[in-house]
Image 1 (tube, helix red, strand yellow):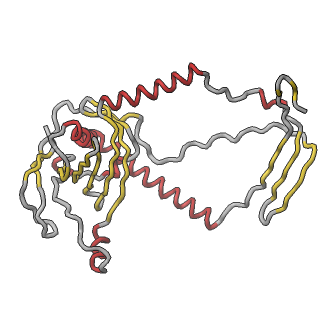
Image 2 (cartoon, rainbow, N blue to C red; image 1 turned 60 degrees about the vertical axis):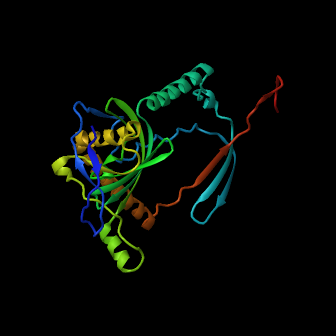
Image 3 (cartoon, one colour; image 1 turned 45 degrees about the vertical axis):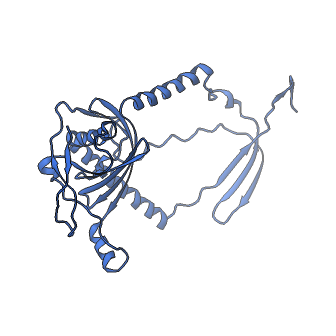
Length: 282
């Protein structure tokens, strides 16, 4: 059962005849799941700085720059460089890792599939969504603010598993009106009136593509199911991402206006003996 069944009629919006649709509810047992959680935009925890060995300096040279120094030290070979060397994966581990990746790709492809999605969000209310399936473009207008659908890539819906790569951008139609008056833009996009999210739940209207192609359309059905079931979580995560992005921008501006003193650059080097043809290099 489709969420919205497209029929031809006329809707007055910007004095343009448009497609309208009849909303239908989602099917029963349309359980969904976000795989891996939703990002809140907080920066990843910083890695602990690498602990350097205590070098014995044999010779040193200092180059004075405008706001920092470059210090070059010739040191004795540290004793502990080989204590915890990074171990490369052996052939068995490499094959296992490749096998796991290949299985994941195969599982997703055989289930719902991988989708690259472009979303243009108007006034945080209506979104023009485009995706591609088997080389053909599909497009809908959705009554969901697709900013809320960022922060995750993989989800389950309608008994299938999907991976979504979302590219989104926001448009202010009031600003577009100003650009039209200034002669920078010819006209507003034809945005149809959709059922209100608060009244009918997540819905969409097909604008391009074969809506009878279930394999292509099940993705857009499933993502709207997911939004209905996880809306509070998705909206909360979006607000957190927005807040953390503003915090990041403020910190970047503070750093630009008050840059910290540049740190000195220290280069330590030593001669490494490498066995060559059974002999030790001098």
